[in-house]
Amino acid sequence: MDLMPRKFYLDDIFDDFISSRKEQMMKCDIYEKDGTYHIEMDIPGLKKDEISVETKDGYLTIKAEKKEEVNDDDKEKNYIRRERTYGKYERSFYLGDLDEDNINASFENGMLKITVPKKEQVDSKKVIEIK
Image 1 (cartoon, rainbow, N blue to C red):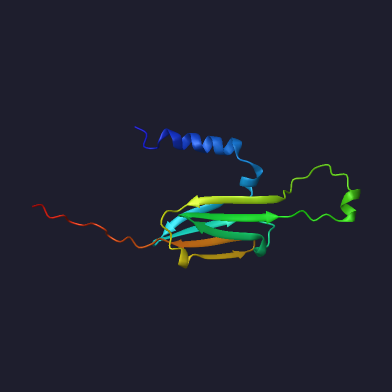
Image 2 (cartoon, one colour):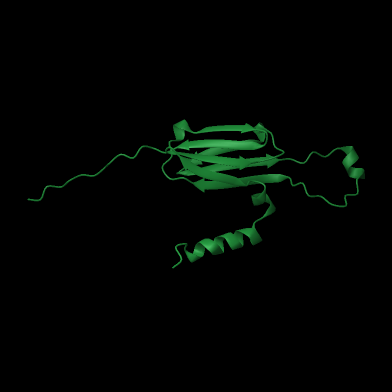
């Protein structure tokens, strides 16, 4: 008996074959530890001021933009191959009920690290008296 849902395998296969270059630019690891979500994302070649982190309705969105710097020398170049990409990049993650006031983000050496504490669950159970 297989404990992994079939959809799980198909998602991985399709992600490997149809992911865009822009998605490849923002690879990340997400894990939970001690009631806090941790996101570690590689964003090489960008500066801190080219990246933004936002939250809205339980979604955490990371945006980045790398602008191509063109000077007069570039007009003379006849490129054989160009692999470096420029443009806008964006990834969103649904994390549910976030503690938005205590989210922390740091960026160093091309790695963005974000910690998102979970909101404490309030037990809203109410017992109704039967008459």
